[in-house]
Image (cartoon, rainbow, N blue to C red; front, side, top):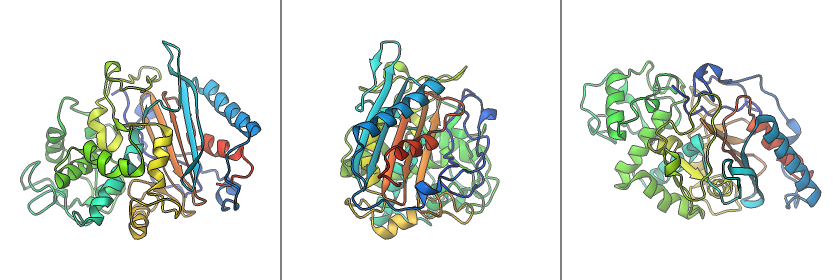
Length: 400
C-alpha cells in the first residue's frame, strides 16, 4: 500500500488529546504516522476574542513577515507550492500563493489554482447531510442498511454480519459505526477497480464490525463514502452534482469539483502533486473518494463554504443555529470529533487532510477567524496547524 488518506488529527488547537487510529494514513508508510504528540497550547491566540475593528487586512510589513514565514516552511520541507487564505467574519483578509503549481514547467502557483483537499471533503459532506436533515428527508438516528432503512437492501439483503443493521446516519458522521477504520484494512484503499456499489456490498458482507455502533470511535473514510451514497439515494442525483448545486453554489463557490486520478486527468487550474519517497501521488482512486476525500478547491473557496456553516452571525447561514450546534457537538464515544469537524472546548473547529502529494487544513476559531492552507506535497513532520497560527500571529491586531 502506497499510502492512504490521513485522519483528522491536530494537537495544537487547545483540545484534550483523544484516541486517534495510529494506523490512519501515512504520508509515506502507515507506520510513520504521528497520530498525536503532546498538545501544545498557544493560549494568547486561543483565549481571547478579536478586538473590535481589529480584523483589517495586514499591512505591507505584516504581509512581508507572513511571506517570510511561508517561504521558511517551504524551504524546510521542500514544498513546491503553498496556498493560504485567512478570513474574519466571512470576509477574506489574506489570500496568497507561494511557489510552483508545476515544478517541471515552472508554472507559478496563483490563488486561482486548485488542490486536492483530501479529508476537508468531510465537512462538506456533513453540511450536505444536514441540509437534507433540515428538509425532513433523513434523521440522524435513521438506520442505513436493511429493510426499512435509508439504503434498504440496495447493497445486499439480510442477514448481515453483526451490527451492520444498527449503523445509523449519526454513527457514520461521528466515525462511531463500529469499524471500517482507515488502517491497512480500510475498504477505500482496496479493490480500486470496484464501483461504489460493488465496494460497499463487498465491505458490509466481508469486513466485520468489531463494536456496537455508537460505542467506539474509529476514523473511517469508508463511513463517509457511504454517506455520499445516502445523499445520492435521497436526492436522485449524483453526489457531486447535488453538492455543487444545493450547497456550494449557495455559498458562492463555483469552481470546486471531484479530482481525477492521473496526471492526464488534472482539471483546469489544478496543481501537480509531489509525494514523498516511494509513495505515488497518482496511485489511488481519488475519484472514488468523492464524499470523503475527492474534492479539489482553492483556499478561498473553502473559506466561502465555511462562512456559511461556521455559526457566526455576519454571513447568511446554510443551516439553522440549532443544526450547526448539533453538527459541532461530539459523540459520547469521542467528544473531540463532532460530525465532520474536530472540535474542542474553546469553540474551535477544524479538519486536516492528507494524501500522497497533498496536505491540507481548514480551521474555524471561536473568535470568528477561519483559515485554509493547502500544499501540493506530502512530507513527514509537516505541521500546517502550527504554521497557520504562526501566520495569523504576524498581524498584531488579529487575536484568533
